[in-house]
Length: 389
Image (cartoon, rainbow, N blue to C red; front, side, top):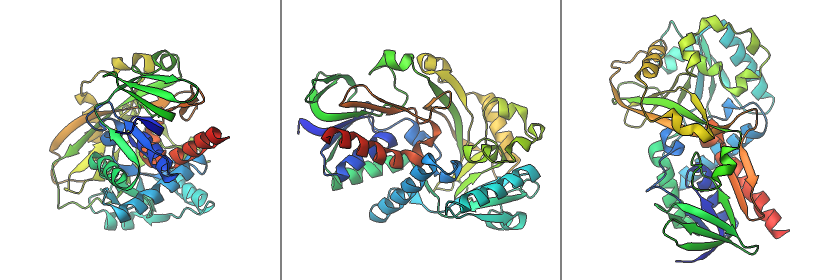
């Protein structure tokens, strides 16, 4: 195997994979190291919702727009499980309706189309939605979803076929040494690979590389509860289904003029206390993913989040979900926890250069599936522009 690369990427989730992709587009040779048998963290444990509408006009919204278009372009060449069924935010009361009307006007100003739907139109398109819940909705036809359990694997297979990218799985990297002319990448078996530049896209793994730096950072780890029903092929819940609790949580809404007028007593305080907002996404087998909740711990204490599935949290999730849709069965096939790293205090991502050749990009929070491709393009452009300067 080639032992010298233009770029080495540590971590093969969406963050690392899209860094590799954009470097390969420049004609560069790339190797991607993955500590596990395959990507097993946030990239595969999420809803697979790609929703630029969740970000207000600005940096992350435009990353999301770029990412959405890229997903569609790749899907035309290789089936990676991308479906263009749009996103809908369903309002449950007048205050939430006011916000979706303001969001509609806000996005019209940046040429991001949306359609306001009446209660009747919501029930016609999504007949499983309860009539006593839906007040109206906003729909983004251009947005997509993915089959998150398989998308990244099919994408990596495609990239391996089409570009000069090598993926090394089950290969934890434990050391990086910048000699001034190259970086020596050492894995846990003692093998050394050299690269001109390195991107560390390590998700929530803060123990192998730069542990002291991460422990003293402003990073926290989020634990999410999710579940999926048994297949319900008789139900049609196409697209990304987001609801009133999402409207009260997503940044694109929180910055709108009427956000402060929402009545907090209109929602279940138990749900708020557990960071719950209700999302639905139907998989291709007819099963419906339901979630999610949010619990936090600083990076240095992330193990305190534990691995147990909290059935009290799942009870609240299901109680809230049942207020929104009617399903013929609520039999749950699987429960799981997802984890991702994010920044506290308003910082949007942990982006640092340890040296001229070693760069960290992590703690993107819940923005990964939607915005990583756009962010990675910009990051790679900057890294290699500086390298050539």
